[in-house]
Amino acid sequence: MGFARVVLVVLCATGCRQLFGIEPIADDGGGGGGPPGDGRGDGRPRRDGPGGDGSGVDGSNLGACVQVGKTITCPAQDTYVSGGNQTANYGTDPSLVLYTTSAGDLPLVQFDLSGIAASTAISSAQLALTATNVAELTTISLYGVTAPWLENEATWQAPRTGVAWIGGNGPTYEMSSFASFSVASGANSVDVTSRVRIWIQNPSSNAGFVLETGNTGMWSFASNDDPTPANRPSLVITLP
Image (cartoon, rainbow, N blue to C red):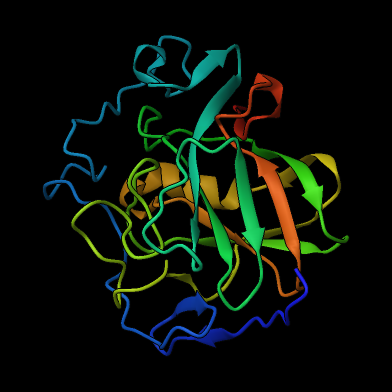
């Protein structure tokens, strides 16, 4: 680690943002890769009918999410991509690495909310992340990714096999963060209510998010492959 570490952030004129010296590129607006009108991006039909409890949630169609009373808990798909190893996929790594160098690493996280009806009202949504390595206390920001990606296919060069990131190199994401938190070792909770409401109402806008910080160093978070289930990323949604 004895070499100079430089972070270069480029703001794209079209509203996307890229790290580590990548040239500004045009944003295609993100969205899903499914057929028009499915509102999901994965080609599967979406159920928007209310559940039997009046919550607007079809409890039998929540996918990996689990509902207990007025609480819905969702697991993540996650990985990180590396500017230093641009063709590598880390979808099975137990860690999500944020490494802010000239050829650094960026974590990607997403929650499938497609089983929740678009009309569903929510009281709150909390993101749970477990920090396993903290270079220093800093603010970590969350930015919406602007292209759909797959956990076991995403690399620095491609969000999924056969499809390049917008501009061809490195993940692209929104210019403005939608949430931030002061990272601490161990459990961290982040209020993401406003963004989760958008994702529920407009599923095609949900390509997950990237973690980023303006400081230099390495931070690691437990991924969905961490051997301790309680450490894995989760999204906890509370219904009215």
